[in-house]
Amino acid sequence: MLGFVKVLREYERAVFFRFGRLLDPPRGPGLVWKIPVVDQIVKVDLRTITLNIPPQDVITKDNVPVRVNAVAYFKIVDPKDAIVQVENYMSATSQIAQTTLRAVLGQHVLDELLSEREKINAILQEIIDGATGPWGIKVTIVEVKDVEIPGGMQKAMARQAEAERERRAKIINAECEFQAAERLKDAALVIEEHPIALQLRYLQTLLEIGASSGTSTVIFPAPIDLIRPFLERADKE
Image 1 (cartoon, rainbow, N blue to C red):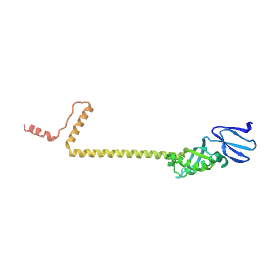
Image 2 (spheres, rainbow, N blue to C red):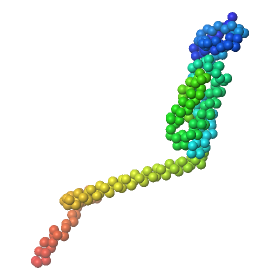
Image 3 (cartoon, rainbow, N blue to C red):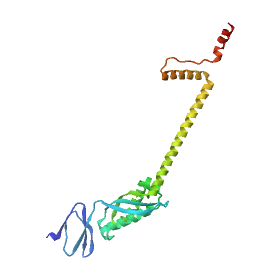
Image 4 (cartoon, one colour):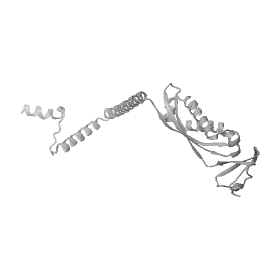
């Protein structure tokens, strides 16, 4: 009696063949009756499957050799097609994922592989899903995990990044100097139009010098034109 009954879990479906002919639709979940010798069943798991794509050697569009691996997530949405339309859906999906990974990454330059992962992942997912659709498989996510770059290229990229940082620092310093010069020019124009502003600034500077030196005595240099009448009177006397 046990040979006549199969118990399928919630995430399992049974594809039935009776005398070699496909019975549609697939059965399950729960109890499934089977006629010995006459019926053959193939159980299919409907849960999401994680597929690790082995590392692939790729030559990027700018002729940089890299080694890339990825991971894909897919599930069977049509158990009948997954069994009838392809001999081994796991192996077939893995092979199409590997060839697609090499083909797509070979159309992009290295900078895009490093900075535009989301865009590349979307392209991979769309192509692989389109290829596996006739097999009753839905590819939901494809993620590029690691991009291995040759050691010499890593050093060259580090030097390039350092040079870029130095260039930006010099540009920032030059902009600061330019802004300071602009402010000094504006101050000179104000003083030219209002000479009293220079005297006020001069007095403020003397007060700051006295405060920084810790002394309460401040010497104010006076213009010679201001004290000349006193000097001439002293000579006459």
